[in-house]
Length: 310
Image (cartoon, rainbow, N blue to C red; front, side):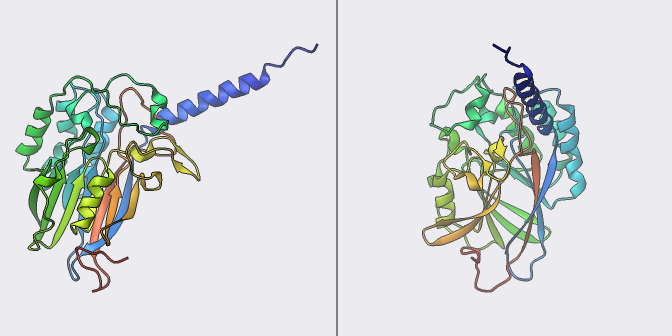
């Protein structure tokens, strides 16, 4: 009997090693996504919103910290932080330092589960499976220090709360929810929809669970902004995300889409985020990102803030 060649095994091992290296390298290849959303009143000046999400900071991540600082050079009109800033209980000072230049701009924030609780070792392939609702929470993070840093900078705390910002003369009404992923959302505390007095009303939540998206859309918010999904984190070229880690369909794991509820339609933007859990430091076909959302005037008088054009 001829001895079996080891060549196929060597090829497979080399391929696996290359994929592992590529996934680890991609997790540090930060990008900026640019998106335009036509939701402003006709004649309004465009507003540039920098969305930063899912930083998952670990102490010592200098490359990520330097990239975050450089985002201020975009000169956004305002900043939205959509949660999961931490993946290390010791990283609050470095997170605040990295965001320091942006903290000098008008901003608002919601928290995600990883702001409240530290990560626990996990099976990395868990990202490839559908979320079954099981939560294994780590030790409590010093999230109050992070909150105090954001509040001291004047950022609006939107965790089950409303806020208001004036941006270059534009009156922006904000509403947000605490993280639905760990059942901290309390929509009854912010229910009622836009009050009608602002130029634009925006809704913010960390994890884009359908119950939050449905409520925001049904009450007339024209744009919902979220994070949490990591864009799928591991994607298949020409197929996309394998999972969203919530009940949102995988085709809307990142980027701009539409959401329909109670015969109303809203834009939905989901950031793929710029980090990973410290126990799953890889991405594939889904590079880490921040997003520069440019809100522009609606193109037709048929659309209103409560019913964006189809």
